[in-house]
Length: 124
Image 1 (cartoon, rainbow, N blue to C red):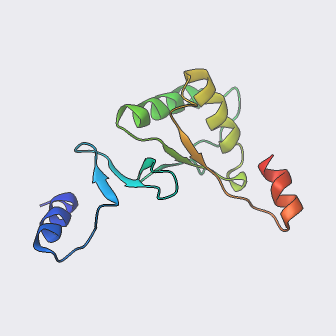
Image 2 (image 1 turned 135 degrees about the vertical axis):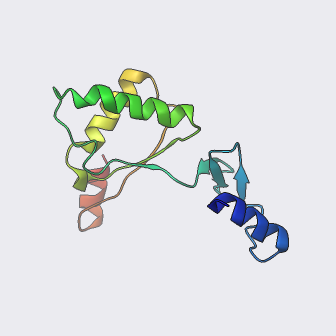
């Protein structure tokens, strides 16, 4: 029995109350509804720390394009990044633009600074 089957059995028994906020869109991707918008996002996203921190001329970028394409093909949309991850945000932006995926991705980031003004500046 895998984790998914176990959770479904526990839910059926009433031992695990997941409720209606969780939905399964297919056998590979579970999504959760964002209450304020009703948008459904996968419960697991793609992290970019270290892996996407590559130089502009790096041959690894072609492999990372394949990663983003596979993410979308399997129903994923969430990409997590941070200014702390070196060039990761820039690389995700470059690759998603080159692949025409910007409208399909939900890119989450963090603000890594002190003070409101510095935070707004960093987001911009």
